[in-house]
Length: 295
Image (cartoon, rainbow, N blue to C red):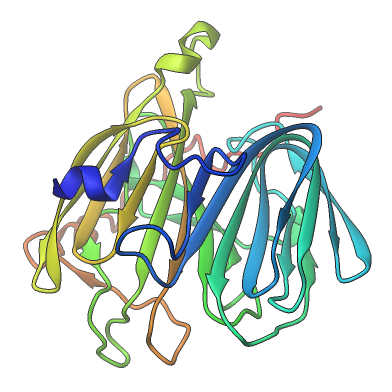
């Protein structure tokens, strides 16, 4: 029951024309939200009352908010490097139109921060880990890059056979300067690896994802993840997320919580924290960074 409550295959969270909806109506959920939709020239609207981050996954989009129009050039896929994103103030509704797949991260708040367009070229790109734990992080919605009220949003690309969200870690206790309370959404996509995958294997592409319990609560996910799947992590240790041989893995993270500070502080599982020390001196995966394949 713990896995079926917190892990949702593609389509299980569909509502009101969206492929995925996570919000306050989701059982056990309070601080974060996510919507994903595939558009073919039509439009969708996201109401005021939540702060929003519009993230093109595949395709290009136009966003109307607060009387202004913003063009998001987007990208061919989530494995084509950073995308431009749009932060939309909680005081404004947003209408999104275009062609392709787009995600909208949300968090309920009364604080109205200004709407802001962040270009792909300005996105902080972090190469994290080393060796088989090498991964690429796009920090467009972190406190260092974005003035927001509550949420922290980023995306992670893990090349075929690599591990990310590792060592397993948690953020479910309020210990100032050490650990923060943040519920977290993982939205997954997978595709044949850019280093030689077979195009006909696109629907078969997958990775693996795991969570387990901490003193804050019981959770148990050991799932095969594919494009469109969602894992909710209200508490507990989470990781690893592993890209299967032959396939690259992507996930979009949305985090927020009840603490007064908007900060990401984590605690590694003490049984596995030593793994970080083994990264020193290892070469970084030469396949990264993944950038646009255009041109």
